[in-house]
Length: 350
Image (cartoon, rainbow, N blue to C red; front, side, top):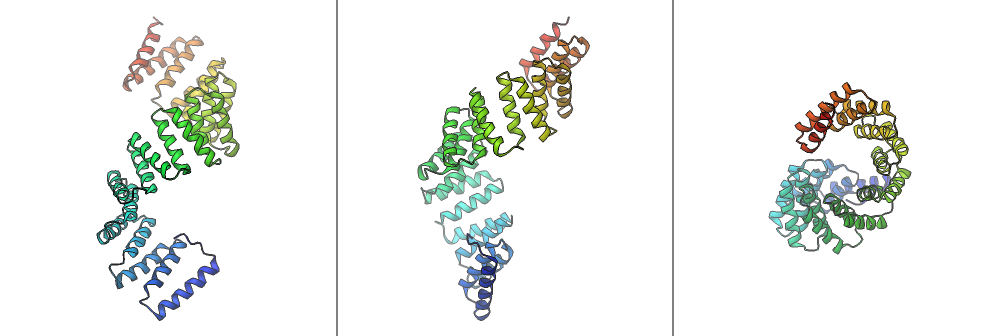
């Protein structure tokens, strides 16, 4: 399937194969070659017809089932693909690639346990099957089996020490379980192997922020923005980093940019309100909190902070109104700590 044909080459090859099959309609090799040619230009229906022709002539052709299953998968006919992989494995029970392909198909169908079972079998047959470890890790990540996913990514790296995606995804997994030093080490390696990987810079920046390495976080966000100036979350996250360093003016600039790129960015309005409040721009803080609440009506934190802004400017009635709403929402969300905090604030008005 990896052949890329120039238009003239494709037409010449197709003409030659058509002539061959006219002269010899039972030439299985020609059907294989023409199906591969069709697949190379993503004409999977035509390719499948040629594979059907092979199977009509020889129902034991394992590769025809394999290639047809691949074509069905490309057409999102996953059940038909699985049927063909099943036939392959009936005919050739030790075919690791068939287990792997069926596992990837089960994954697409979100049948995760079946996918893992097939990757297990592929690995049992071929203990050095790096792709099977890698795909099994992806599924285990989705199931939140994080330590098992890390073990599989580690096995991929043992087998293929320069596999950038394995370092990157293992870093993401370490990030999820808050093992930040390991995450940073993997992102560093991923970036060294693929310096153009902006997602690795972005995720490394997020870890730097979490570990309070704010200057490093800002440097990575800057790098991402240099090459992709329209990614709203990067501006937002850089804004939260500036907020953490009390550079409120720069935080407002970044939150504003995020909102320009995504006018429904609730968290950007909320945090811009926080920054505006810090520098005494209370009316702007009120407006942004109100917008955040408009976008997210159960936003307890926004109600709470809006109440505190009203308290700061001496509007007791509005302060009490919004703090009461915050307390109600925090209770509904089972956030007892913040609910109690707001209740204490309300008690101070009495």
